[in-house]
Image 1 (cartoon, rainbow, N blue to C red):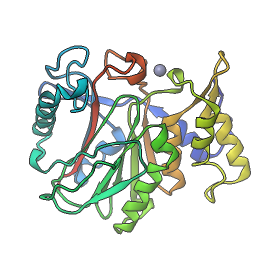
Image 2 (tube, helix red, strand yellow; image 1 turned 90 degrees about the vertical axis):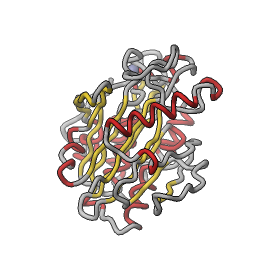
Image 3 (tube, protein in one colour; image 1 turned 180 degrees about the vertical axis):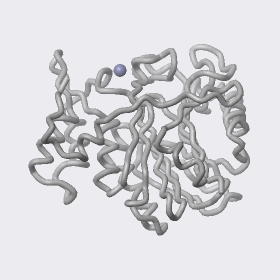
Length: 296
Ligand SMILES: [Zn+2]
């Protein structure tokens, strides 16, 4: 592993700092919550990250799959029922919930009407200022990111696999919140459970596309670029290069001016007992969710 130097920038240190999140029980559902986002509950934000537990979805998709496309769509009914259970557990209005198609794009769409059914098929991040409209995205190793603007009360959730991360979907989400009247200094971000460097060998071409989103930007210096490469890409003993996807997304948030980030320390591929993991399962698996809603 790379070791962080005391001289490395505070921004890099913040991006790399991973925390143990809390599991809270909502009826039969164990839900992970970011301690940083939980601080905003009194200010009108409710959020949760699901695990694979709490439902009745059959193996190998057991037991709380939220992806309606898995198993060639044969579990669609079960997934939709689980989504309703999730909304009920959090006292969210299921009928207003919005779920994008998720195609590993960099596209963000603002939800402006709780009653409309916009075409979200090519979308990987949602934003809203609407109270009572739950946003749900689903994952199996890709990075879930929730951003909350506490002054204007704005919300965004992004799905950041390596392709989405390379298209800076998290920076795009912050930009969308700014266009809605938000300011980054009032934003906080939570980067949820996702595949870690421990389980993510990839090619140098992928690493370069990811590094392009956080290096050479106006946000940092040449010295910081070097620190980023040293800290956010691990060269393993097998000589594979392993980007730290969670930290890269956290750094995208911080470079965009977001005040604070909270990164989960859990790797989805290291914990198949807890999470769905595309890599660990060979692709035959379900989807966990990141859900959030402005509640007043
Ligand atoms: Zn791992």
